[in-house]
Length: 187
Image (cartoon, rainbow, N blue to C red; front, side):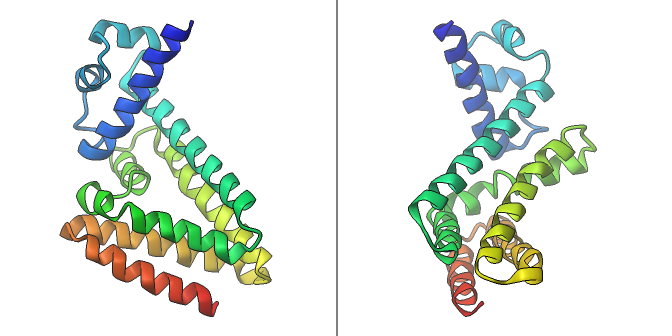
């Protein structure tokens, strides 16, 4: 059973990387199998279609963020510090964002453009971000403004990711991270 899980995990990990770097549409099951070191025929044992594998990638990304949010909730007693930890993470992956874009925002956009049935499932990851950020602003005492502030916050992160990728410039992330940090201190 451990062997079965290992291959499945390798396939999901390879798919996460390749879909982020190449996009969903340009990534084939053969690419994923090769990257994972799994014979192509074996992929179908774990995933019937590329869409099934992409659904597993979406689930894994959502779980990653849930774990991150839980860790920040444990590590920081202050909601502002949690939001700053989020921004710090964005700053640390600045080069990745400039090279390949946001792994979540890019996937949501592509699946929506392709009119994929997975579009709604992928969008749930961004919804998760918005809900978490809304709760942080609520804890900061922002009441009815919390959802709007969360939308501004997540939009800022997604916008900087899009622009950094479009221009291949990680400096955009640096500037926007500083701007969001300042905004958070003033809110």
